[in-house]
Amino acid sequence: RVNNMTGSVDGRTARRERNRTEVVEAALALVDEGELDPSIEQLTRRSGLSARSIFRYFEGLDDLRRAVIQRHFERVEPLITSPDGAHGPLDDRIRRFVDIRIKVNESMAMSARTAQMRAPYAPVIAEDIKRYRKVLDGHVRENFAPELRARSRAEADDLVALIDVMVSFN
Image: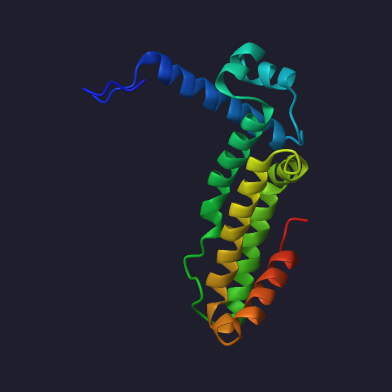
């Protein structure tokens, strides 16, 4: 809890956030090791927290999964921004764009698979996927803005969708 007078956080709130972060980091480590959907037992071993504690920090498994997916995307999102954007010759921009997408896809493939598995059963995860796709669409639009401006809105949207499919982690 935050003390309104001092703005400080009490020990319980800090411990709760620290433990919640520990569980998310443990889940991310397991996903990075190839475990698409870590079990509670794996999470308790990796985090050092009991199952009861884990469920105290999360409303359920989908809440935990969503926190893991969000945290992973926070790590990956800086890779998506291209400092050069739509500057330079098209061939150079294509190379930069593809290099960035390869890095992004390599780093988020496992989390993305988990999100796709859970999305049909967890609307909040499906919403997160839509939000992340918009960010990826924005990356396409940013890098190829001159070429997209030369097209109708419908053609530009189709090209963005086509490019996204071509460079998706699938």
